Length: 126
Image (cartoon, rainbow, N blue to C red):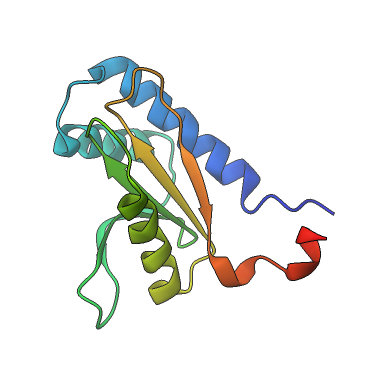
């Protein structure tokens, strides 16, 4: 059984992120990355919602891709534990299973997959 959640879609999203990183470089602003990501999603017919509000929480996702994956964009020197917790909070509030945290400031782009905690089964840790 394949345990990777939304493997193909997350692979496509990562590819788009790499293309954007190659075009803008590592010193752009978050809005620049989001604008170009949006253009690329349109070109590839990847369904998305930008700046999606999670009902009654006041939280706003950078992107919701295909009503499945939360995509959180950062453009800062370091990803912190708080950034991870932010995505985990979004997943808990929204009920989505997978989030991708991408920091475009890194020299080498490394999308971080974050799985909603309650979707991980205890049997997987034995």
